[in-house]
Image (spheres, rainbow, N blue to C red):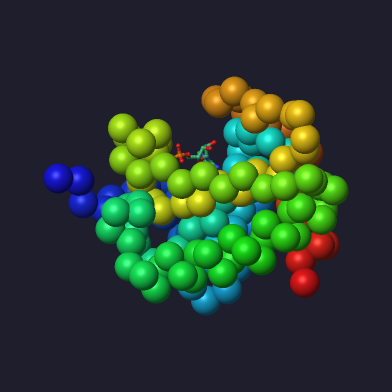
Amino acid sequence: MSDPYDDQNIFAKILRAEIPSFKVYEDDETYCFMDIMPRTRGHCLVIPKTPCRNLLDATPQQLADCMATVNRVAKAAKTAFNADGITLWQFSEAAGGQEVFHLHFHIHPRHAGVPIRPPGVMGDMDEIKNHAEAIIAALE
Ligand code: AMP
């Protein structure tokens, strides 16, 4: 059985603006911001504003809301980075690769032949800010 939702997780703190984030998009149900250890140029995350640990306790409505935002931001990110495609990740529970226990979807703009970078490398904050602005500019 999974642990319960912990409202001290880092994405809950981002939602409460207790720690900063590079916002890309938000609506009443979801929030999108840049990953600070980007594995691709333009790597960003979509989360629900309501508590949810991962795919396994998500409601159909939370998933639908997140997917609407994923769809919107993915198209903007593809345009912003002149990407050839998009890779979408979702990890559930530690065994599934999850490290932050608030449901999130990773959006990766992809270029043909360019691999996803290794994990755990902090990005350049000026560059991440510029990438957020590029996606925002491409949002319809
Ligand atoms: P995972 O739980 O494995 O799906 O991934 C969690 C992701 O959150 C990783 O890609 C981290 O780089 C990212 N991350 C961790 N802390 C922050 C933060 N404060 N702001 C933005 N991204 C973060």
